Structure formats: C-alpha cells, structure tokens
Length: 155
Image: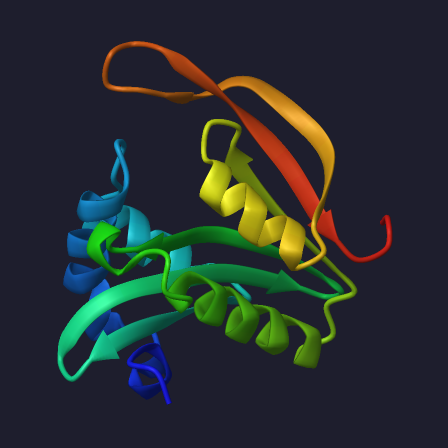
C-alpha cells in the first residue's frame, strides 16, 4: 500500500469551504473564493470529494451531474503532492460517482499549457471536442487556451 492509498477521500460538505479555498489558492493562478465554492456546491447535482491526510487537506475534485451528463468543474492537488496518483484517484472516484448517477458523458475544460493534466485525462479516455481561445488569464497578462474534453458518447 502506497502513502496515497492510505489517504481518505470524503464528500465535500458545507464546513469544507475554507479548506477548498486554501487548496485552490495553492493550486491555481485565479483562485475562487468562499462564495464561489458555496454557490457552485448549491447548484443541483453538484458534489465534491476532498482528500485528506488525517485532517490536512491535500486536494479535491468538484463535479456537477445533471441527468446523463456530468462536468468536472475543478480538480486540485497541492503542488507538493502531485505526480503520486492523488489527482488520478480523485478524478476516478468522481467519474465512478457520475457513472453511478447515470452519466453517459463527462465533460471538462483543461488549460492547453497544462501537460500533466492533459496526460491524465487522455489516460482516462477523454478526447478533445473543442477549444476556447484565450479562456484562462495568466498573472503576466498572457492568455491560455482551454481544451474541451469529453469521455463517453457524443450528446
């Protein structure tokens, strides 16, 4: 059993908002605030999973499932914990939850300049179905394209 196998994944709850913000700040250049997370999780079909080592949060995944379609909204793993399988474990658990809830197709957006995430999604069977030019803004003012990926049959 690896260290990553021993980590606990738990459903995200209302008391986890501050930890989600803390993780998002550590992972993204344009972090979301507590209000954004609260509004997202209040949407019908929204759910999340958080990974913890004891009480220390290490990453999360947020999704939304509506009928037979799902969307991965955010995947976050602290930089010091990347590359050891935690992101894959979070995404696979979320995908399992979506499929159990009836999802036939699952969509997501990923920055074109994020090769690690793109490799993970390709390994999980996601294929590119679209592109959003200049979707992500970087701190230096540059823009990165978003790739729209899907797993499952076309809608």
